[in-house]
Length: 324
Image 1: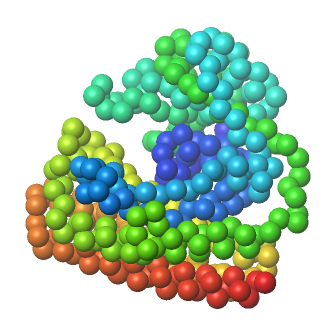
Image 2: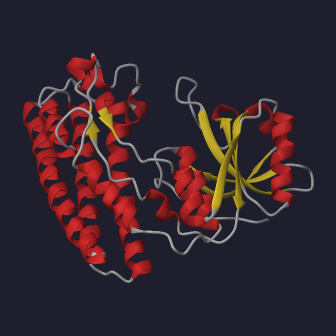
């Protein structure tokens, strides 16, 4: 059986983890699809009548599909097939061509998962091979399982779609301007749809934490599922995006030979860790209950992050100018 290594926590959600895993299995430098992952905005909840702080966090990573095609030469397409048997035939056809396929299922029909029915039921898997009896040889990114048998009967019950297929369209254009995404990121950081810049938006977020009602943020979530509420999910995306962008800069430094980008990469990697720290303390707040001192601590970390992000942006500007 053709097995590939599942990657966990590299994308914004389960489906994206699977997509990135397939790109990595094709020996593609998948970090290049995250050239727009360093971003932040914060909706003015009072003016927009948004009830929770978590829903006000905006993190626009652009199109990983467009970036995959441009920088990796890999076309990512979503097939929204309703009929499970038809979907199965498409998957088998792709595997026969030596291609792995990502597909979405209802996780409650997947034997190796222990999920309660009130939890999120959509889950993505990778099929990379097929048994003689028609069962699919699959990989799971959450939890990481490298090689598991998905019975055909289980697939037909679990399948929801879409299917994600991958086509290598040929060599990448080696005249690509790697400066353009850097300047695009810088421009986005100095703008905002609601404030003067993303840095001012971050300050607004820091202020909102001081008066946050953490129970309201997790309304409708059970104890074991609070991590999936908007506040925790979106803060996780902020941390992941910066981790990916940090690696993206290292890869660009390697491709172009411009080692100056490594300084900004290290700064952004440190920022990612700070977002993770702030999120962890908010989790603690959810467990302990409301605490002004803890909310002040989280707020102060976000103020610190804002300064770090400004400094990292300055470093990126200096590095980008040297690339010209």
